Length: 204
Image 1 (cartoon, rainbow, N blue to C red):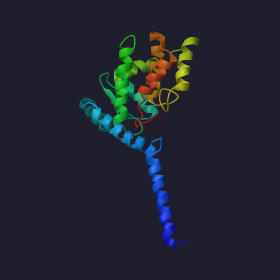
Image 2: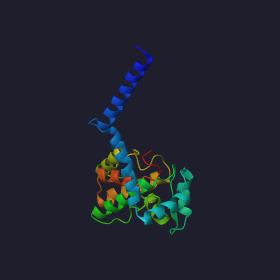
Image 3: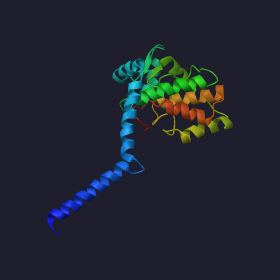
């Protein structure tokens, strides 16, 4: 078999493989392309107000992933805001999903519960203090089952990825919602997942 013939055979195989990839029933290549365009459309559909708030919060954060920050919250004026991500840089796409998801969740709830922060990256210090006070609340056996369900099924396996201030604030929120609004484990899981404040596209 001469060299030119071998090259022709190799080239033919490559063409067949490429054609198969493009026209195979799975359509993997086209799926990827569509996904890129879908992501672009999602970003383009985000409101200007959300983009502007994202830009501010992602560049002016005062949140810290440390145990000491939890104590410093009590020295903040109630009107002060806890802003920004604790760990990874914020993602605009994920941020928009979270604030929209929290808005929808609160809208379909039995009441528009003020204690659920509308924005996981912009939390009122006065509210944070209130929710911190609920963290040590002892739940009944039935109430504890709802809390334990969320601990097992939430993306972070808890109120946050580590025991920083968010762990205790959103843990207190969960106990408040279970006690005062009879939230189920599934509802607490959804609140925690939508309220992830670690940054990035996914859970940690």
